[in-house]
Length: 460
Image (tube, rainbow, N blue to C red; front, side, top):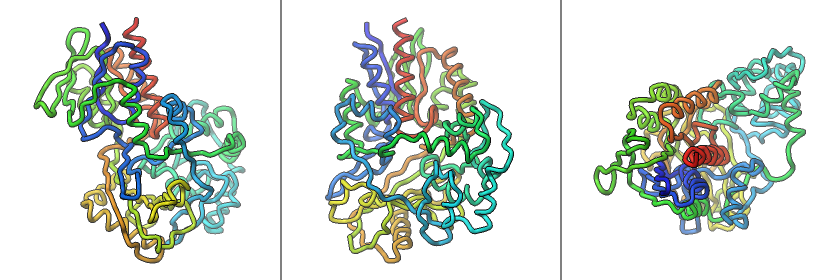
């Protein structure tokens, strides 16, 4: 008899887990429960009259194998596209400054390139980093922003590191773990790099040539649809799992949806929902207090994206987009000129622009309704371009509690959560952006690894 598998959450992580389990456990009966109207989660492709537009994640790191390998497995390689040569600008002091070259996540390998971002006094502080003695305990983890501020000065954090990381993590780098966010840098320090400058230089020298990012022509819906189809899963949208309980050697899930309240029995369960919801589901079991406590200690941020198509009479800066310094008095955190960044999108009647909102503890901005948020996006674009846009089409997409704060020691926290699940709730796995890190490749890797563990357990 094949395994009965319940996947709670139909985002990228849940669909990837379902796909992996379908391959590892032939004959498994897989049900994906998705509370929303459609699967995909943070991957959300909508349609303007001119063509598809991403309202969620826009790209993935092509140099990591997880996403590229999955795209190839699903036969989507021909749809891969890479960005053009334009780089972003940083909005600081009310002006746009090109992102300096030779940086890694905003960390400078050569302070002399930062003249446009730092004052002479700030540059002098940053330039002393190679001379400062560095105390580092191999295997340790520290707040990234605090270390960078100590070594290079706070201006490097505010105007380079935070703008680079803020769009992905939605938390200031002072709240992010160095080892979790830039693992290669921690590993270089573990190996004995004497300074941050030396460690960054080592990583920069080892970079693989070629495009850093990739996306799909036609949108991420190609990946979402291919995963759902290849998994063979029964996908039930508008059905939210509200509780999980033990039932003998398996589980019973309480579901609220199109049939009212109903139950689903499963031998294996994948929990692939944002942290607050996951903690609630585990709490309902009554036997995983440690896991619930571990997850409850992870703060989350909500976010929103406004996609615009604007008349081409608007003169966009000759950059791929804008990253915002955290001391800049504007409500948005990033802006992407999609039709500048991606050559395959530059044939639309208008310019495609995405404006992102939402940082940790920034609830006031996201309380604005969709019309107000669109107006804020248009105002932000006017401020950057120097004239008001004529909007042809617009769309807003929001995600509640979608971005987890990946703080120092996060890996140990998740390991403890997983250890308790293995002991108290065998056959239940937790996946998603709050486990092995945010971003498309990390979510894919987390989901496939968890699915393989479940398959091994069932086969044993």
